[in-house]
Structure formats: structure tokens, C-alpha cells
Amino acid sequence: MKTILLLTFAVLVSSIPLEKSDKKLLGELIDELNSEVKRLSENNETNETYVTDLQMHNCKSVFFCQAEQELLKEVSGRSGAEFDHFRTDKKLMRNLHKYNQHHVETCKPALKDEEMTLLDFLKNLLTCARHVNGQKS
Image 1 (spheres, rainbow, N blue to C red):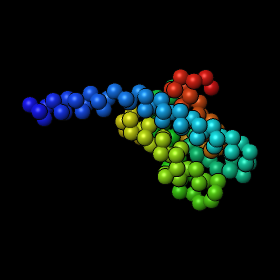
Image 2 (image 1 turned 90 degrees about the horizontal axis):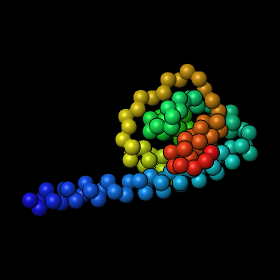
Image 3 (image 1 turned 30 degrees about the vertical axis):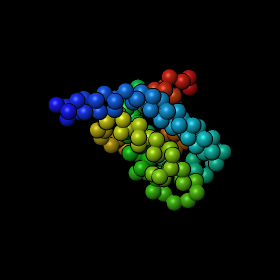
């Protein structure tokens, strides 16, 4: 009986703060994306980095999942100071990963039909993060 009560309590407690933590994660993700978009806008050399042009799927969780996969595959492993913010131990990638963990979504890797610059990719990700967080673009 105690075990059942503990399990019920654990489920209730773990599901309550999710919305607040999502808001916080998205807020931090938006801050990180803003600074990266600004930094990349000023640095034209990095605009030569291309990633897959993802379908935004009305900013559903599948978009965030595919965006994380794409950044891990194409950008996180690159060397150089301009790619340091995309390492998996940095705040931008950590928050994107945590957000995706909260929205368990098994997503297939995006088809590599079209490509876009990393800057445009991050602008799309920023737009979706703001949309989901309820902010104006």
C-alpha cells in the first residue's frame, strides 16, 4: 500500500512543474539563440556553414528534436572558437536536449533535400522557441 501511494505521489509531483521548467528552458534557449544569431550575423565567415533546411511542422516538438539532431550531426563536432557554443556541454545544446527530453518525441532524421545557412537555421529555431514560449518574434 505504501509503495502504491509513493508511486502515485511521485507521478503527481513529477508532472506538475513541467510547464514552469519548459518556460524556463525555452527562456534560456531563446537567450542563447539570440546571442548566437547576433554573433553569427556579425561574423560572415561562419555563414558558410550549411545545415539541412528543416520543415518547421508548426513548431511542434518534432522540429526541436530534428533541430537538435541536425546541430549535433553537422555543427557540434566542428572545431574552432566559432563552433564552441554548439558543443553538447554548452548551455544552448544542453537546454535544447532537456526540452526534447520533456517532450519525448521519437523523430526521424530530416531528409537532406535542401540546405540553408546555420544563421538562417538558428533564426528559424529562435522563431519556433518564441512561438512555443508565447513571445512575439
